[in-house]
Length: 200
Image (cartoon, rainbow, N blue to C red; front, side, top):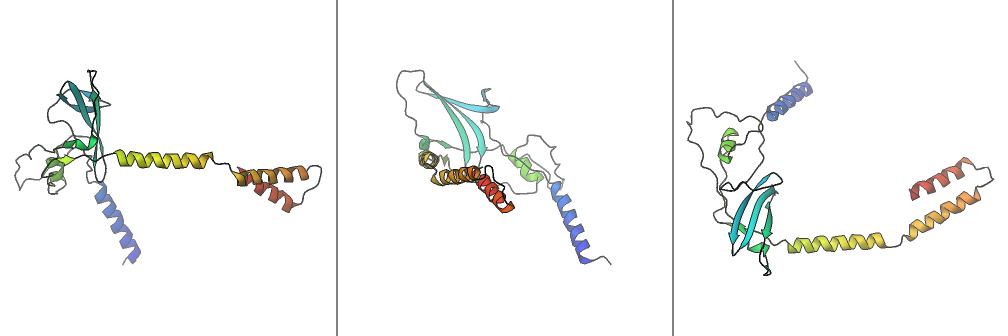
């Protein structure tokens, strides 16, 4: 009979191998209609209104939001005010392919682009519901203001004169000058070395 810890270790190893084979998916969004416009490898959606062109592309997703990059082209001489909080997007997805419930769902090969329905079916998960209404954008100005305030605080900290550093430098210099032409004890040498290491 095997000891308990060997059985537990072998079960953990088996569990680790089983989960390593599970597919992982990376979310991607693309325009409903292909535009053949690209920015840094991302396809852009395009809209034109009142002679102003807007191009939008998916950048990444975060735990609580989806990040897009917007480009604006204003060929007119009129000024343009863009309110980021006025944006919204409406999610939709390709319908799930008809499948036989008794048939085993094949696992897509790594790197293969699949729809959300295929990804959910291959992981034996239900497809999560889409938002029932368009998702409004958040106003980035409070976040930008907070980042600017934090950067200003850090710059102020960096610009302050370091009195402690000056005092340690003076003490180190004084011990160096005092040690010229004298035999140091081990304790004095260690003290001087400790002062130098505080300054580095």
